[in-house]
Image (cartoon, rainbow, N blue to C red; front, side, top):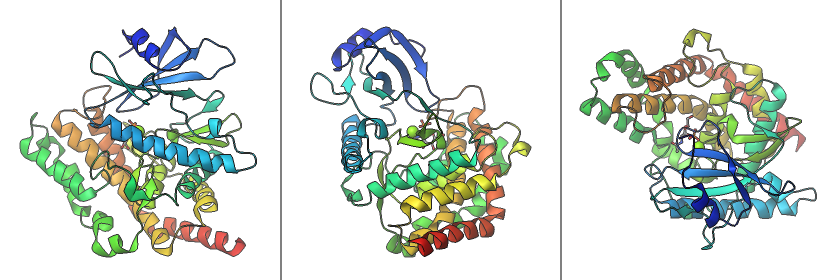
Length: 373
Ligand code: GN1
Ligand code: MG
């Protein structure tokens, strides 16, 4: 949706100073709608306004509570650093007139507003090792600053979000219902997914569940969820909708999914998808620099499984949505979800072949970190 008809009603609700005429669509999220708004005061922060997809985030109150708790925790940590600037390094939600950080408008839509951070950039495809290294630092630091928060106290806003067994069940169900009769046309993809399903259920195995600590994780660590400053240095991690209890490898894997791929997540010509291993190395180095302190051995061992799982799971999710008739992810054209699924499967296949040497890179950085600290 390009315009927001009731923007005046929404803006009047939040304690803000927006120029409603400046509203324009922003970003490339698959779930929520995001808009940019200028501050009427030149010196003040501009704003981002988001319509929260409440069909997916069914309890906006709990979602917001999770976000506020994580934001407050991060801001306290940043404020403790000598050079820390909580307003610029952590996102800031704008309070509504009723004291809440979201608003349900007269049409039933849910909104939230936050400061827009000027002079920041995001990348859908990573271009340099510096960007990848800074991304690794950003997500490593994010996890580190939250490592003393009890993960179980956060609400599970989307149940079983990264549980591959549930995702595979949802795919099976879609195939059974098959509302648009699409499943016959994706038999090759379904067979491929099936062949790896057991191996990809690593995090659901009882030994792993016993060995791996539950942490506060971001759960949507696409590279474009890190804001870099004008010198390409990590500034702020955004998109905190899915902060929940999880395994660190999920965040590591989802970041690598978008960093190591030389093409976008929905590349049409899968033969163009290549692995950019130097970017992987740079991310792993940055990540270890910030997370090396708190990670335990079982977590380090699990990182490579996150690298394989996240593209695999993303393919399962895109394919499920394709079969279901594109009811979850926004699409730009017919079969977009199928194209996304194919690109993710291709990426998975390439990563799978390189599993051993990518794991060596991870362990190399762990050793380097541990010998210095
Ligand atoms: C969705 O909306 P966006 O782009 O931030 C999705 C993520 C997927 C991602 C794939 C709540 O995130 O899980 O990894 O698309 N978010 C939700 O690009 O399902
Ligand atoms: Mg997101």
